[in-house]
Image 1 (cartoon, rainbow, N blue to C red):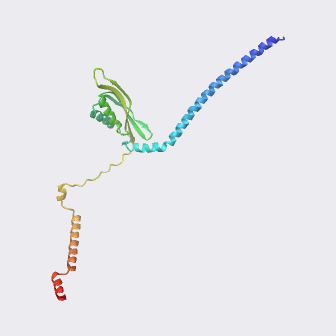
Image 2 (spheres, rainbow, N blue to C red; image 1 turned 120 degrees about the horizontal axis):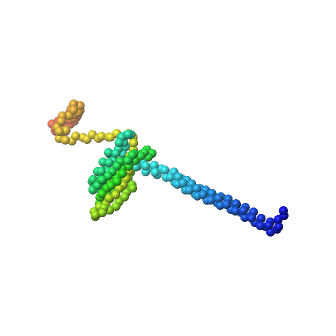
Image 3 (cartoon, rainbow, N blue to C red; image 1 turned 180 degrees about the horizontal axis):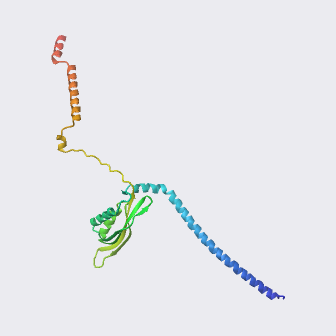
Length: 237
């Protein structure tokens, strides 16, 4: 069966169209893969650059961490800390006029060689001035106390009062606390001067007194007597 020239042209066009479609489909899939890979490469490059910056800033962060670490309290391993931090927060709230209605201590989280103890306050009431003073007192504790997830809203029918919630994160370390150095204070009361001196001190004072007497005698012997001095002057005349 022979094909006419027209049929050959149509067959060639059909084959070319199918081949072009297949190639175009493969190219589109390849282009999508290349664009995806390119985005991943850019993201990895950003991460690498960020890690390089963090590594370069390690000495600075280490110095800051050493300063902050000295401010953190140290608790023995296994010792409960909920009472300590709850009392600290409650005292700050009472002193600044913040009423905490509902609070709950969460589980301890260990981060590197430090630990965090979150306290969730679900309901509090205070004026704007009171809550600001309360937050300032907590934030002034350095790296130990940090307020997060703070929510504030006005109380209906109570002008000037606010309510809300927050989570207080308490930072500390686990280990053996350093021993407390107790400085003995000198007893400067009147009774301390009236009390008799110890025997050793009395003996030392007595020896010093005898030495002073002997020195005075030596000085007296070295000095000429007044009468002898007058007689010598008359003989010379």
